[in-house]
Image (cartoon, rainbow, N blue to C red; front, top):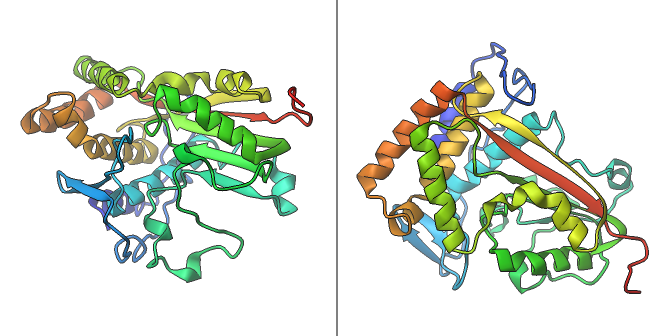
Length: 315
């Protein structure tokens, strides 16, 4: 189990409610984190297509844009982020109007559900939902499903996985596999945090330029409704929720751990592509934390959903 998860477990052992006075007006008194003991640590998986850098495991697929690791520590961080987002979005796991559909047993696809740790042979069968199937694939090669197969397609935390050129093909695939009248929802973080301190902002701009050089346009999350509309979907809806980083009570502390964990996970990219030394990177992590508290920095998570028309325009 990762140090990140242990730290968060410690945070939430304190039952005293605190309020986060963030931009979205949420409170964090109800935030809870699941017990992950024994899930990620004991998993066995094929490691032939991975490489190790700075003690972390990364996907070694040729041409892959993704810069985050695929290991138990990252699996824990993504799990924590899931519960943080549920709090930021006031208890919602999704925003599309599909509640009744799901109760009737609609078919759902979660694109990019995680790093693959939980779908290996070692994953406990007892905690797999009976109505769930896990499939390993590469969305860039096309989704392994027939046309108009799903009622609801959901994709989250994939902004660092795709280049600008990838997005058009990705959207075509999402459109293809969702049924006419079905919904597609996109959710992701805006890597450009708000109210940053001077050194944090300079580092953020440096990161953005490095991502652009890799073909990744992280600010595309702000244009999700437009992206959906331009790719054939109708009636898009979107908004964002905000979370404080290292201030504002339990939620801010948890978000701080998750945000810092994501930056640390990108250390090989900072060293190889952004030309930081290891010492400079470590100093940056410490400076970011101080500036986030002093400036009450927060991060926005954007969401948008839209519907595939009942009758496609090209039919």
